[in-house]
Image 1 (spheres, rainbow, N blue to C red):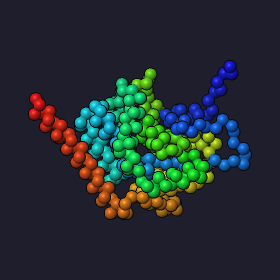
Image 2: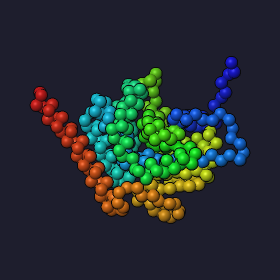
Image 3: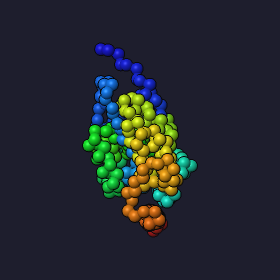
Image 4: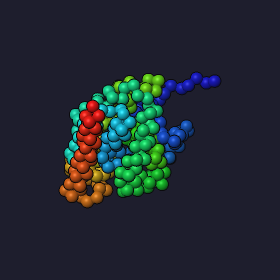
Length: 294
């Protein structure tokens, strides 16, 4: 038997970045492409680009319902969801939520979380996909492009979404696990901002994808790094800062939210606040029941 070959520099870069680089249900061709073959990719952010809101928040709700989190934790995550939909991404807040989530996940099994992610997709996420983004994804698949999700969301839920959408695979934040159980630490860093661009470059090198011929889609100013890596960037449902940047550099903008400008923003804020009120109401009712029971 021939010894296994050392991993390529691109594969090592992906591993060091803490990214799950293997495609979902689509094998990577073993043969080198010919000199005339051009492989194009399409790279999609997930939250507020494909799915309305933060997918990790909905996963957190699913985990809470199954006893992973305290009631106070889910309220904190709900507040973060409101801030995200209202004001866009904030790295400090993301880091706070990430640290707490990793602490909570310590000792739980990967298989358990993946099964819950499947349920969350069926119960919530599939209903929150923007039809316009879905059409873009379908168009890229029909054109024979590799389609990858690139998200700061835990890779377990990124891979579930990728598989359900029928795309090539997902790059996401990887939580360390030992013998199938989470340790409470990350492999590498959170896949966010410049880390997304680094992961896409490593993937393109590994899979022989021509980034000049490729496409990228994102909603936040934190996606500027990945949008700048490709020949065909596009802002989808952009926050205010990304909208200004796109206008200044001539990037196209696609708006898939219902309504535009202040109307869309008011609708999102109202829905977010209503969701937060629902979660807080659940907690209050649970506390009251506990008090009556005691």
